[in-house]
Image (cartoon, rainbow, N blue to C red; front, side, top):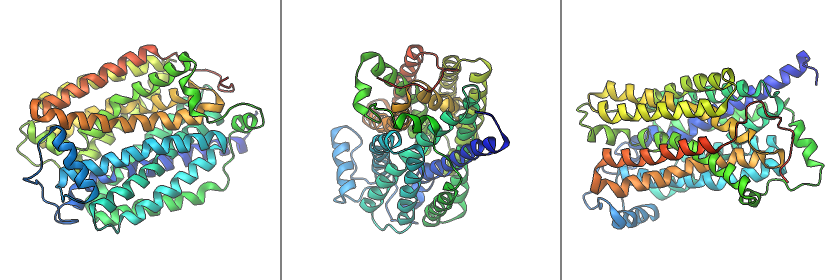
Amino acid sequence: MDATPQTNRKLWLAVTVAALGYFVDLYDLVIFSVVRVKSLGSEGLGLPAIDPAAPAGGLERLEYLWDVAIGSARGDVTSAGLVILNLQLIGMVIGGFIWGMLGDRRGRLTTLFGSIALYSIANLMNGFVESVPAYAILRFVAGIGLAGELGAGVTLVSELLGRQRRGWGTMIVAFAGMFGPVAAGLVGTWLTWRQAYMVGAVMGFCLLALRLGLAESGMFTRSRIRSVRRGDPWMLLWPRERLMRFVSVVGIGMPIWFVGGVVFVFGPELASALGCQEPVKPAMIVMCGYLGAAAGDLTSGTASQVWRSRRRALGVAIVMLAAALVWLFVCGGWGANWFYACTFAAGVATGYWAVFVTVACEAFGTNLRATVATVAPNLVRGSAVLMVTSWEVLKPTLGPVASAAWVGGVVLAIGLVCTACIPETFGRDLDWEET
């Protein structure tokens, strides 16, 4: 296709819409982390900072969390926050399969704007909750909606741009998106927690107006008229080579959400355990961490283009993340500013998210591409449930810092092994189908 000015405008309109959508997506994804203490504490639902009756760990701790979820136990800020966060992440795993299948069967644009509509409605209603169970249910619904935007947007951009430019396009989408959490940190600091949710809803509704002028992916349109299985997640289980490709893609992203789901969300608890005497603000952790991630997206995305290798960029980023976490666990207790600096460094290292989602698109055929690009990031996000739960169970024995270090070490090892197993995808022609 000739790159006429009109064609270029349409291509970059798709990049712009996907980038703005990911901005709002990440805003809504982390806004709970920003307002967790404010919304659940005395300013919001009135939960205590610590519930003396709460078990420290083990199976009793899991039973207690279940009671908090169904409302038979009042809970505290940490336990209720853990329940709500886990339900949001579980919703994202479920939503990943729903939107992924729709993306390969009904189209990338349908998925993109359908997911935005759902999480915008859920966030609007979040501004009116009066109980922990209602809060948790709405974050679960929001999680289902949040699951679809990134995969659909990145798939659309990857298929519309040429093989040499798509890495730059997905880098722009990821870079712009990382400022969503920064905006969440600012809004969560300046406004009430209810207003912060409503701001996210309004931004989502405004995005829906940008649907006009966007064109569906030509690769999807051509694939749709052919007699092939599309959007079938069972195809990911066989043959073995395709299953290993999918497992490797998911494993590559897990270290990112150890940082996003444990270090950023429960940073105040970790800072206290490290001996930090000054109070650490959740909003500052989120802003510093995701500013770092924005810088990391530019760095890793550029590196993968210049080196002409996704695998090399991924491997270097995971090694850098290991070094940043060692620095965090050693120096994070020196003071609040030191902790913020450590979270910024960890955020820079997690910036390979842009390369990760690009690989998820490039490694699979057109009839499964949206499914993988949507399911894989949300399985990575959902893996934070296992990481946080493991951290909770290990805390009574090892302490908060050592248990976090063990969990982080395991997921970093998984990430490195999976990077070694994934085939190189840079420059691959995307116009092919899985059989």
